[in-house]
Length: 137
Image (cartoon, rainbow, N blue to C red; front, side, top):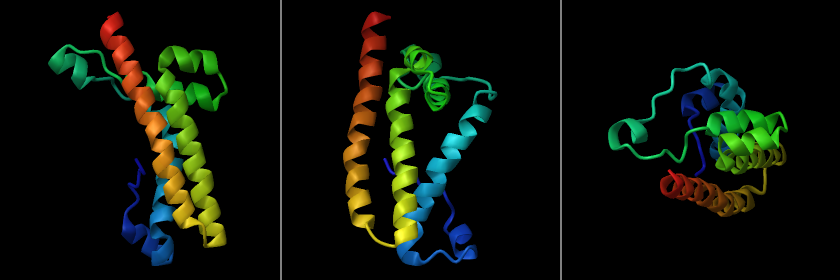
């Protein structure tokens, strides 16, 4: 679940070495998500899972949960969506870890392995929230 939405041309403009491009892209993408979350709450909400399939959505509330977690309001974050807390921690670890790799120029393999391990609790949390919402109505 390494989120990398950073265009490669942008990294070339800033002369990021090709060996660090993936890490820089993931760092910038994680940072963008963390910084853009407050803006995203102002976008009109449309949940395709609820609208098209009449099913509870595992992701509804993650943005609010992410913001509450960043403000250290864990109670509100948990009420919005418990998976958001895990996702926030994952993004913070991604951003910090990738920054360390970029600055030191090594440890990329370790960070990629940690990322692979770290994505499993995020998916488990999202799936768990969905199951609870599905069966508790």
